[in-house]
Length: 311
Image (spheres, rainbow, N blue to C red):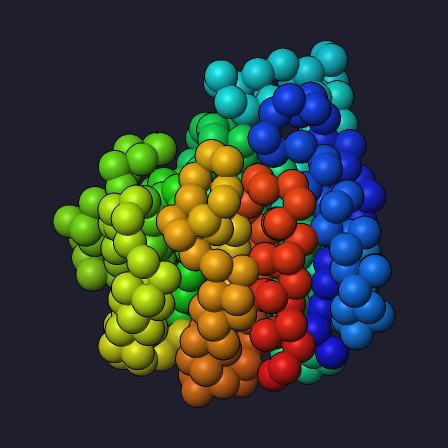
């Protein structure tokens, strides 16, 4: 079965009801998955908390302590977009731990793939700075965790969020063992993600950015996505695939949007799955990033999960 990693602790990260990244995103999704019957087709597991040592695979202890201190003293803001509430530190370490929970079950051979229905998101968090709604970089921690615990070296991170994952790029910019592939709207927040940003040093060529204009059609998007997955990913031959699953490329998303239809999330997922079957025994962990259309986000996630289930 496909894993679904979820816990109500993610709802306690309190950003306020007017903030686009709010608890309704998950509440509505859980309700929809139950009503559609898909919840019962999944292996639902609660996450464990990531340990301090695991979070430190990406983030320095001083930064981790800063987030904890802000939470413990009543909360605050890291920047104009990024909230830390009293419960945010706990929610964030369980969010980071969600992917690790899925990875362990997959590496035991119990399941092939899984989706982490989590918040806060992570791909904008650089090692030393939270931003863009993100506190800890969940997918970066997951990639480092795989390499530190298992005899696997080559990790592919696929990021289809409408915003460039600057934090993930920064973490692995010099690293040839992690191939980071991002398709995103550009120019757009956070300002990074030019095609020329392709890594440096030993990591040169292992950072793939595909910047897109806002009028990109779904057909064009899928064609470009397929080309990279077939060519670059085949050359890399990953041993595990992690998805930064941002559903703000959906055409109606209130703060992003790239014309993508609900059904297209199933198509993108199937393309990744083909590469996973070819290269890494189907091993995929997907983590929720963006996606802010409160009524349609559950439909987008459902399309993603239905494709994962049909492995």
